[in-house]
Amino acid sequence: MAVNPNEDTEFNDALRKHGILPPLEPTPPSPSPPPSPTFDDLLNDFTPSELRELGEDAPDDETERAIAAYRLQRLEEDRKADKRARFGRVYPIGRDDYTREVTEASKISEEDDEAESGTGVVCFLYKDGIPRSDRTFQHIRLLAERYPRTKFVSIVGDKCIPNLPDSRVPMIIVYKNGEIRNQIISWGADRERRIEELEAILLVTDALHMPERLPQERKKDDSESEDDEDDDHSSRMRSKATSTNGRLQKNIRGCNSKSKDDDSDSDFDL
Image (cartoon, rainbow, N blue to C red; front, side, top):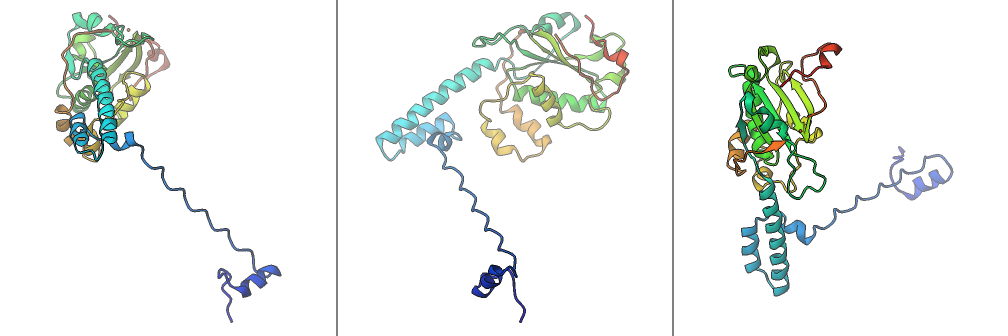
């Protein structure tokens, strides 16, 4: 008679007791259930207007007061976020504007920034008609809407840097607190780049602020394609046309490899 060593029977137990069968594998513990969502977690996805309606339909006074208190907290958070959202679009500039709109703009800190860390300014040098430049410009516009606390400016490459060769376009220069934090040359020259790659670099160089709360539309549309997002985001963020001023530091080269001697000097010289 064939013996199934995996069966939990008295016969198999006797065989295991005498070492004829190996011991049974221990049953893995059941995974712990996820923690129950808190009251704030349940309300987090509602807008303030939806919270007001929810409070009106609350089953008792205590729940209504709790929803009302959370709604006031959210309104205060939104008020602060709106105050910080000074930009929200790409500002075209000329060479004569560069010092004021980029370098000096990056030195201006937000009102509640006790560390005086300045403002992230992303300067995009482009040329129309170059596919990688046109595609990157779409990404820059979308990121400007997505991160309204960061100032995005654009300027034609050879209007900013005389005789700038097309091979170096597009170029992205990141400023914070008066210093160059990053310099990317020929972005997308090696392969087609995704917006997430550029977004990650700007986050790492501290040019972007992570949103404290993901906008409702972003939550709903995260699975949508990048092309769809370009239209959706334009209606999401309120553009704030504000002229600001900001600071310069590290250079990080983009896709085109260069010699060490070339890397020691910034392409931009005002």
